[in-house]
Length: 100
Image (tube, rainbow, N blue to C red):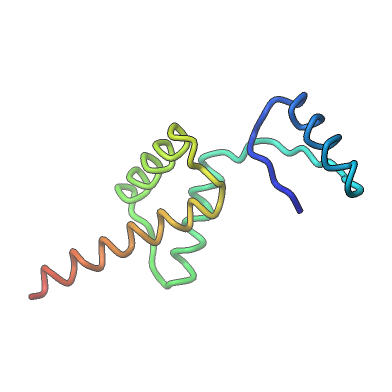
């Protein structure tokens, strides 16, 4: 599987043609993942850890995802997981400091 971020279709065709010289390629074009889908995935990650995400935390996560997207660093669900883990880690540090 060779995944390419959202680009104009003409670039997808150019890449397909370049790669097809070496190997048979089947192109699958999907719709861009929505913010609601990313937040749903974050809720799944939280549920797997036995926690829930507050509305405030969802807003922070959404702002971080928008920032990643604006910087060109958004890599889909992997980025959601990375940011979720960073927020969770920061929350655990904060909770630890409160209990000292």
